[in-house]
Length: 382
Length: 195
Image (cartoon, rainbow over all chains, first blue to last red; front, top):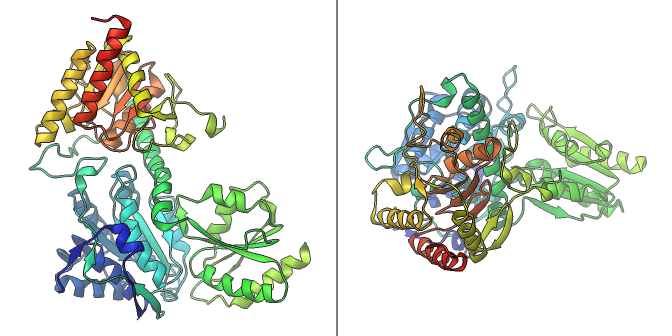
């Protein structure tokens, strides 16, 4: 292991010199883990995530991580991560599709316990018949867990967003888990140029004493006392407390916005915001939409693109404002349910101008041509 | 009501009061405080705290675990400053020693709990209270429940970023800032003729 140097996180993210590497997404997220000064990683293998935590295991062997092991299954993994985080450790884990669902009870548990866990979700199909292929239907379910949800477009996003996730998650007024999602295979197994800061420069360690809840350190008061959970009681006070608790978790998510702006720049990335037709997409759908937009503009169609980088907290104010001027809004997605179109329609006044789709799922790719065709159809409707 | 019109004022606000953050109230930046949801210079918030405490019928401090436990030198110094502050305004001190709900029943005469803080406020007829040394999550929980169900005026002296759910809040409150607040209170006492 190279000798490591703790540096200011904002320097590491925005000012440190960067070297170009040719990496797949799973390698890129492991490079983020290398620099995040993580105490413990627990994981269970599942395609297309397995390779990432395999590489992270190598980092453990090299001394970059204090502890690392394979859990019994995803539920055990996410429970162990909860325990480690309650004890004041900085944690990392990752999973995919069916693993996400197997572990699902723990995601609102992390949020409710105000644990700043960072979990990478390398999204894949979860339907029967079995699919290991790209499909991000699980993001739609994760969005209501109380976690913050980032959606990376490519390996570079995956690297940067994973590091930024720790900075946002560990803010005392936020202190919530962050899911950093990518579309499986399209990002995890696609090799692209990724610019990385020096590998010996790392984040400062996590300071659990800034947490909004006491850490579970039985030797150092004030400890977290877990007995007599109020949910075990059946009376108005317990219900009111539980409701207030949930409200506070959502309030913490709202507070995350200013930290996201500070570290990520913005929750959205906008190209040609005044266009008549606006594409709104996240993840690799944004990459395909960008190609379609450029092709359409070459043919004289006035089309723009909004890439949503942060799904929770949803960039509501930005989307309401951006949705005012276009005559049509097209939302391409890599899932059958159309969770992003649903999010957008529920927030803007004139939801009739939102066309959900094109959608592909079950491992299908999204050729820019099908988005381009949708742009042309909508152009004729105006 | 538009979110921008929402104000964090004395309750009872209703069956289930909203979290102030969800109504558009944002936390102060360094050097600022919040009065009823509006960002003000920190000094102005200190003057308002002095006014509220000095005119209260039954001002009460609720110190939490971060100042009740002598877990480091800073905590000890801060606890001493809190005690001096409470004595300066003639306030009672009712501790919040931990956060677990007290069943089958709490003794509201001697302690407060974040999961049912209204019981202690009702029992002691507290009209102005001060949270200090309470972990932020539990402070927000209790402040919102108090606003929802009681007519108690809430003040939060936070060591981190402050509390939208309090009617007045200061952020980054350390021992030095508590001493400054004590000076503001002593000056206010002279102005209003309190001995």
